Amino acid sequence: MAAVLLRRRRPDLGAQLDDDLHPAGAAIMMDFDFLTGHFDVLHRQLVKPLSGGDEWTQYSGTCSARTHFDGAISIDEMRFPDKASYGMSLRLFDPVEKEWSVYWVNSTTYEVGPPVRGRWSDGSCWLVGEDEYDGRPVLASYAWSDITETTAHWEQSFSVDGGETWELNWTMDFTRRDTPPPRPDVPKVTGDFDFLVGEWDMHNRRRRPALGEPAEWYELESTMKVWSYFDGAISFDEGWFPSLGFRGATFRVYNPFKRTWSIHWINSQRGVLETPVIGSFGADGIGIFEGPDVWEGQPIDVRFRWTPGAEQASWEQSFSTDGGRTWVPNWQMTHTRTA
Image 1: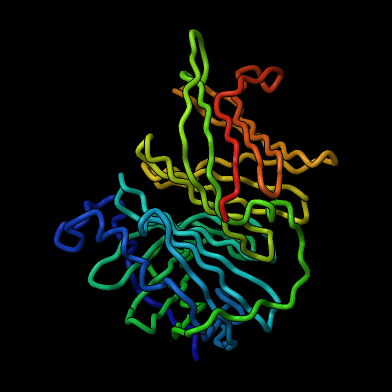
Image 2: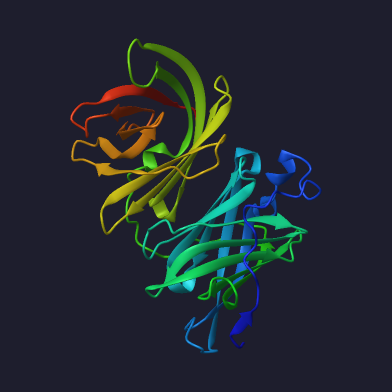
């Protein structure tokens, strides 16, 4: 297969969504439902992108995917048996901007890559974002097409001229399979959040307001279900908060080179990947994770504190306005396992 140069212009990502294509919010959230389940995947990759070469390699893999937030989150785990590695796409639908953001993670770097963004139209999808390849800034595009109940086609292309031309460098052809695929034979890098896999009832105590006085605490109940990917190096949960009118999700990625976790929060009302808190579990078994954020226009630091347990666990969120010298707890959860 020769390298392919496509002359395309970058779509107007700020354009209004065509109501004829998505007449209801529910329809929008079903965009990636076709990917739910298990697939065999045939990969074709350009050996040396952006070099003028036309040598391609071909290999087989698998994909397992599910949706969350009634379809507004799509997450898959790609398995590459010949490479003894994993890949993952996290797709988030933004209910305000009416577009998808897709983030890629692989078990080579364990880093969350920059997103591509875009929308579906007439049964196909094109998403574009800024990226880097081999130290060189590029535009990257993902394209989905030829969607059926049992098959789908995906392509990745790069542009170095602002989207005037695109070089195709990776294709995937999906064919549905009936059974879960086998796991790659790779060493387990961490089991830090394995305790959390399963289903939980959660008793919540929240401070109102999160900062400032006077303040009061109120209580509510919620539930959560947790999954593990990359043999423990990625942890994902979906939480239901019926009395607050939203759902929450947490995306945790472990970096074995830095020996730290990056923990991102996702709110169903916003549909974006929030700035992570970063940290690790200490010798005492307690996990401390911190990072910068903004609360009501005020720069703050955020801290998560995890106390693991097989049948009961606890989590606490605190804010600091003085660079971490003092902390104000504002959200506490007690988890009780149900499954």
